Length: 461
Image (cartoon, rainbow, N blue to C red; front, side):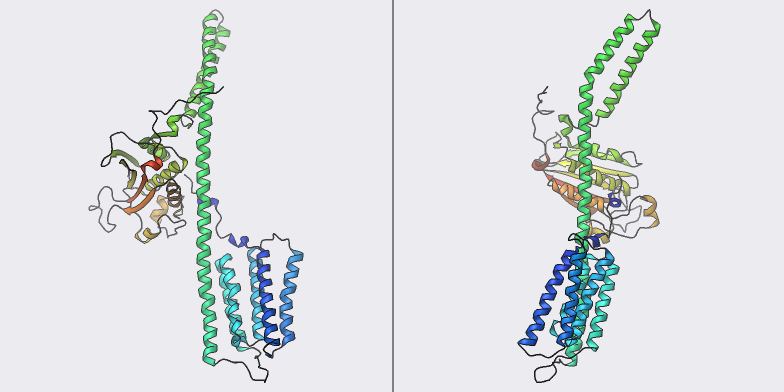
C-alpha cells in the first residue's frame, strides 16, 4: 500500500492566517493604547510626548484602514506577508514604548503578543526571525527611551536591577511562549494532517468495498443473459453442422460468452454485496486483509483457537472498512520489518476477541515506545532500513491510521517487543520482533447470528 503522507503537504499552515484576524487584533491593540495614553495624560497627569504617541498610534490606524480597503475580507496571508504584518505590529509597539519610558513602562510586557501569535502560524525559521527581532527591539528601547514624568517633573523609574529583571523576563517570555505556542500548534497541525490521511484511507477502502459490491451485482445480473447466449449458440452449432462458415461464427459466439463469464467471475470474486462478504469468520477476514502482503517474500502464519470458555466455532465478525484497512496496515507494518515470518493469531472468549500480530524482525525502537501510534514519528534511518523500506519515510502514519480506525470500532491496542533487543542472534526466540495486540469486546464487532449465511433477502424487480 502506498504511503499516504506524500499526499499531505507539510509546513503549509502559514497560509491559514487570515488578514481579517490580524486586523481585529490590531484594532484591539489600538483601542488599548489610546485608552492607556488618555488615562495616563488626563487622570494621572503623566508627562510624555503626547503628539508623537498619537502619531505612532495613528500609523497603526492607517495600516488597518489600508488593509481593509485594499485587500478582500477573506485574504489569507502568505508566509512573507504574515511576517511583515507581525513585524510592523512589533515595531509600532516598540516605538510607542520607547516614547513612554521603555522598560520602566509596565505595559512593556505586551511586546510578547506578536511573537507569540507568529509562533502559532509561521514556520520555524520565520518564528525565530520574529523572536530575534522582538528581543532586539526590547534591548534597543531598554537603552534608548524617553522618560515618563510625574506632574511635579520627577521621573518614573524602577531600580536598575528591576529594570534588568524586566528585560530578562521579556526575553525569556519571548523564547518560552514562542516554543510553547509553536509546539502546541505543531501538534494540532500534525494531528489534523494525520486525521485527514485517516479519512482519505477510510474513504478509499469504502470506495473499493462499494465498487466490489457493484461488480458482484453486475456479475450476478449478467449471468442469465450470458447463459442464454451460450445455450442458443450451442443449438446453432448443432443446426449448422452442414454450414462450416456459419458454424465457426456460432462457436466464436460461444467462446466469447465463456470468456465474459470468466471475466465477470474473477471480478465478482472480491465483491461485497453477498451476505457472506458482509460478515465472515474472523480468520477469513484476516486472510482477506493480509492478502495484498502475502506475496512479498515473507511467510504469513495464521492460527485461530478459542480462549478460556470459548467454543470451537469461530466468531463471525462484521467486515467493516475500518477493520479491514486497520488490520491491513498492521500486517503491512509487520511484513515490512519481518525477516522471514509473520504470525497472526486469533483468540476468542465469550466476552472478547483478540488478534495478535508478531514478526521476527528487530522490534520497535525502545525510544519510540511512548509514541507508538502517534502520527509523524520521525527518526533517523540507517542504510539497512533504507534498503529494507526504500519507499517509506518511517513517520508512523500507518500505525496511527490503523490505531485510529480500529479504536473507532471499539478496539484497544497494545504494542510490545517479543524479545530483549540486547540478546544475541542465537539467544533470540523465533518470535523475536514487534507485537501488536488488538482486543475487541465481542458484542462490538461480532455479527448477529441468523444462520450460516444470514437471512435471505427478497429480490425486488
